[in-house]
Image 1 (cartoon, one colour):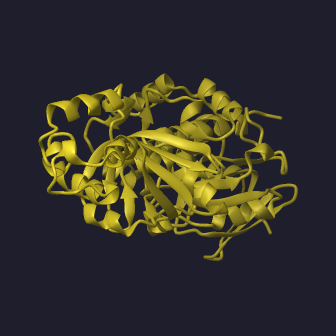
Image 2 (tube, rainbow, N blue to C red):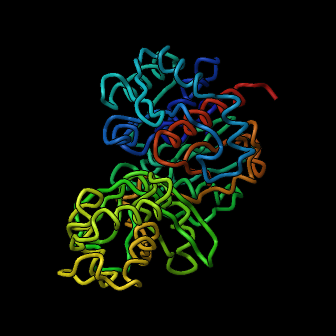
Length: 408
């Protein structure tokens, strides 16, 4: 088989794949980027609700479920400032918003996707869409065969296939299968950055209501995760930024059974017990519904009253001591039970993937298969909501390209 030999072939034209292809090509590598979909960058286009939260000013190892040594190495080689400078050099103007989140100034993810696609083309990389890789054979070179009957050959190979999250926009298991066949171990992928289903059906009474809370998840009395932010009640359970940021830990823990959650509605009050005592003194004549007016959404207050068993038509000063005590306990630790995560079609990311102990933390080269590099969400790395996953995708693609291009 007399095939042209590329210096590097990259499978997957998502965030890390596009970054890697551009960097390999501009370093003089004969580069081919293969994408199974008709269009590249589809996950970039839907990220950040179509706005593309491309990085975060607070990016650091604590925002990831991953070996902190790996994240530290990645961020040392591709920092927040480097990410900003990189996209500015591509012609993308950015703006920083609350919680350090960075978006393109246009407010549209197309600004990032188009800039990357143009940069890949201008660097001289070849992009072929509609090419679904079925097999990779490792010999003196990598031989790649696609479903469409094409064969390609390269000295080095980068798997940037992404995870199985969002299958409606190219999410797939293909990368895991290719990595396995090349000697890698796959940690069971599970939905992350996902809404949670809960056992308590009464929550459906709150559908559509939002509240600022602190949300905690525990299992066997051990704290799994905690996050502050907005919670959105739904007909199946809970959603919103606070939920998304604990969902990775909950998703993994659900393999061992249901996960207890607690909601603290008074997270921003320093001394909630004292606050309630003073409010009881001030408004002891009020009935429960009126007592909670101004501090809780009416529907949340009504559910709380039912949950605690307060007598609705009796003033607070005439409620039982047990009922009054339970107000504080419940408002700072309202119990729910997570029974599952929403399906892959609603998960923005995945936890699990290629075991990172099987790659070189400084280069992203495989320790199992020399010449193979693995980047982005295909790895067992997932970040919290806010631009952290995209930053890791850029960083891993950039670092892999730098090392692909070095003669060894």
